[in-house]
Length: 184
Picture 1: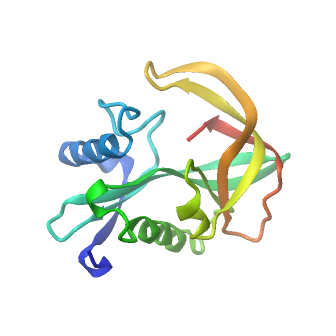
Picture 2: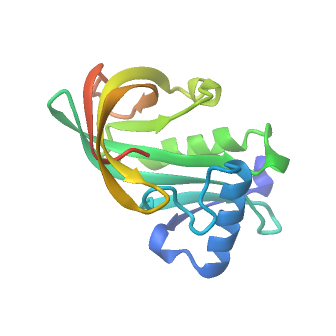
């Protein structure tokens, strides 16, 4: 599928209607089989907005959630746009759609008050190929039981699946990262 035949749409989370909710739910449960809740379109918390990729038949091919927040990196406040649940329908994988979504996020960040893009990845290849770097930080976050949607306490451990991309002139440093909220 050629990128010209796709449309990327930005949608604010609270503007998602029932039909689109069903489509996103179907995509998330297909991509995160046996992991994703089957009764909602977020894992622990709703993102602020999403980028959705549609083909010319208006079929949802891919999605990514984005969460904007302040975090504390070694005592310094940073503004972070978190990348959540980036996924592409099995049928459309290996066609550059995920990289296209990451490029759309990069374009979105231009001239915005964002210091870093941040995500967690089991497979880092896509992100390394798109300018992200793997970092190790001791992270502190609000632990949420995704099944019961309740707070479990505070998590504090070094994470090796953390990846970032600099957007501003600020430099990422290893050390302590306080999410000031939940872990994506």
